Length: 147
Image (cartoon, rainbow, N blue to C red; front, side, top):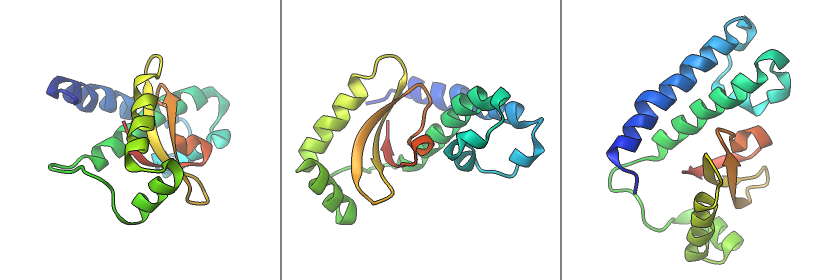
């Protein structure tokens, strides 16, 4: 459960700050302006050294929060179906085992960070936790669920 105040803080303050700071960081590099935030953080080696930390932190924060808002839905939830169910069952043995591992990733993260269900380039799923505003995209994985 995430309370209303926390949601407002993340939406109205944190996310807005990440977008503002990312835009400020890339402002002196016009060639970066046309890239999506996902493109920016998926290729951190191509980001000029003097703004890499700002792009990592603020680009990651923007991408992570944008993804989080997209996966929220009223009356959503329940057990997965279809291909994602098959992938979860293959990787974790059951949906209950997945929930246990995901909960552990979310609750044992020291400091700030995220818990993720991700896919790799071969379509395999796994649970991981990233510190601060790091994104699975930075390591070539695609987020499916994030908290």
